[in-house]
Length: 201
Image (cartoon, rainbow, N blue to C red):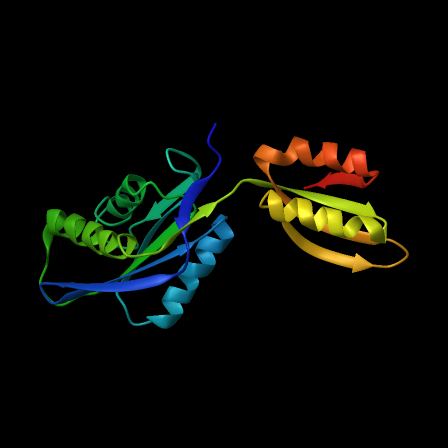
């Protein structure tokens, strides 16, 4: 099963105006509901006088999300959160949160108009946000002699693994993030080098 998928590479904000109402869409990458709620809280802080802060997020691989949620924040049911989520789901992007902030302009848009406005604002920001690839990795902790550090670093650079932390004492302890697809190969390498490797969660 394909583990890698696109996620937002940065946060971005775009604004559209429809019949004097302002719709400000913000997007960011999130890996948990806590991340999503923190992003929403920041939007409320930045635009405290807005009438609505509607949102949706999808966590996990597109088409097989592990979590998804949405909220209309006072707009008529189904006119804000659902259109935001629908656009997210059609963009083939995972780990993504969109908040659309609305300033009411005095002209009612009707249910259909609201759906188009929230979808349009979401489309505007998602079509421009840069993407990066999320790689499924496993965390491994190593205990090794000083002579083994360079071979480990070399293996990691060749296999697109990341050395997360290194600590020096009587021996070297390292935390590394290993791509899922070369996880088994890494443990074979460690066994051959006499390196104590254990998976962490």
